[in-house]
Amino acid sequence: MLHDMNPEDIVGDFQEVTLDLYGGFKRRILYTEIETSYPDGKLIVSTTDKEGVITHVNQSFIEMSGFTEDELIDTPHSILRHPDMPPAAFKDLWDTVNTGVKWQGFVKNLRKDGGYYWVKATVIPNVRDGEVVGYTSVRRKPSRTKVEECIKLYPTLF
Amino acid sequence: MSYQFTVSPDFTPSHLSGWYIFNTWLQNQTDNAIHLEMYNDFHEQRDAIEADNVDLIYANPFDAAQLVREKGFKPLVKSAGESDEAIIAVNADNHVEDVAHLESGLRVAVTDDPDVRMMGMIMLEPGDLDETNIEEIPSDTYVIVAKHLLKNEADAGIFLAESYDELSKMIRSQLRILVRSQISVIHHSLMIGPKLLDQREKIHDILINMNNDAKGRGVLESLGFEQWQTVDDDEMEFMIDLMDTLTM
Image 1 (spheres, each protein chain N blue to C red):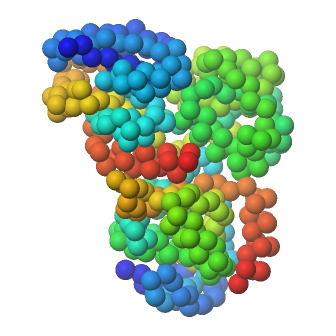
Image 2: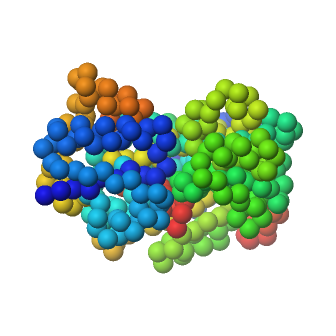
Image 3: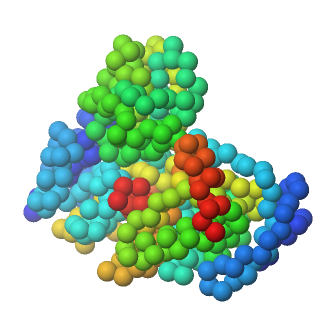
């Protein structure tokens, strides 16, 4: 279940916005300008069901997102959705993976404490016996050049 | 009936005799005739898998998808507590502190171990480096990767972390680690093919209990392992999905 963000969890000065998320959810987002840099050598891995609800996370996901495993499992992946990410990017993601093809892109993710971290994300549909049963997403350290390009591009996509 | 066992060609050379000892032990324990065939490279091994000549394999994670999805293999065990990790290292005299500061045209010494190469290439990405703007220096072994670095014939080397850690102290003192992966979920696995599947539970139990007697422990030691740990179908599916995500 996806809850509004709690001011008590936020570290530093924050702004507030309400986002419309996939599945008709609305969520109150509290976000700061504090970046956590992606650690060298790690991969963040998660799987979701067909509806984008998280079914598996690895330790790096827990560490970088700031959530506990219990808070992440059975929760929509959009718990990471940052207001600076244009909806067009996620539409492209879903349109791509729904055709059975891998999607790759650079994503600014929201942390539980209101901060953010940039990733290079790859998402594939998990196909069993010809049917999509869920999705696997792997995030890795992005190049700073690509992140700087996205910082310029994404505000133009709203 | 005789079965064929093979080991991923990227095994540590010092453990070659260990795999023959293990195969003899396994034949005695399971009352199966098992022939150990060691292929020279991944290409030869994949041809054998394709031709259905392999019944038991200590497999590189890169091959797990084909084995499970196309050839009906199932996982048995992995070396307990171990995973495949990669290291990017440079000559100790190289002043670069961060992968992000490496530059286009980089000469990278690399073996043909597919999972290590993949992890290494991922770790070069933060420096805007990929296959299109580096020069790969193919190397037969990790010792040769190290030699290329020491002779300044390569600017960076991609190592299996375990093999890097086994380099002599003198060689390591002349190298410097830029980044070591901490992925934890990519590992080699002992996998069983369709002709042996009716013995899966029996063989699994024999392997899991292998460290409970002195002889079994000795055999494990010759492989450089402490004990085997179960890999269930879900864990294998998760690893295959992860590998698919990184390679497709």
